[in-house]
Length: 277
Image (cartoon, rainbow, N blue to C red):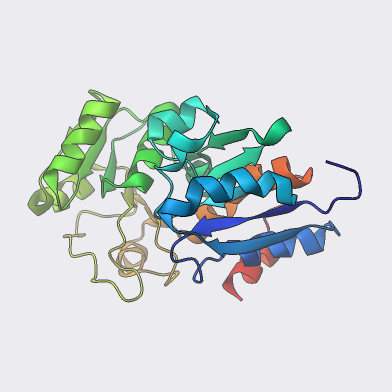
């Protein structure tokens, strides 16, 4: 790439119009005076590989991948990090020399950075973590929590077979509980994480008994629209430490921005406001 070429990045998904990533990266580009662009791109699954192979030739230095392409992109990439392999999905691509595609997953990093800042007193080794949901986001969260030293993960999902698959993939520190018993794992946990879309604007509420939450519990919801989900409102009322999902979205973007544009961005209140705009 010649020195005069403007670096391009973006986010690929279908649909993509709702993505907050262009607001986030646009804010950082402006803040640091970087002559680059970050754009949303709606790409169908059948076109994904052709589009990705063409992007480096167009001046793209990398991109984010979102639903529904996060799994498929692993079979397209030339190199996949151990982390992305374990999670079974990638959200951050970097284009290296000769257009080589390197796939990584920064969702677990984003989750942990958000959690550590929002709940600095949380000790991962002190108590089990309860995870609601068994999709791609849950895989990233489980991987990060096991790395952090959580002794046991209590997992519940509306479809039991998906949770059982995660137990098989991640091993004996995972304990699967039927969805009707999800209230019990909330009671036992030091950390409660909602990785489902339940509670999101336009989706049904999370209908799990939450009376086991108290002042010793840390509760985080990956949903960030609304910022204060029903789960977080109940947890606040019970005196728990709550962490909203917006920080995960922001922090997972930090490594990609740094790789693509050569500047490690700062996460501050102005960043949050830019994403909420």
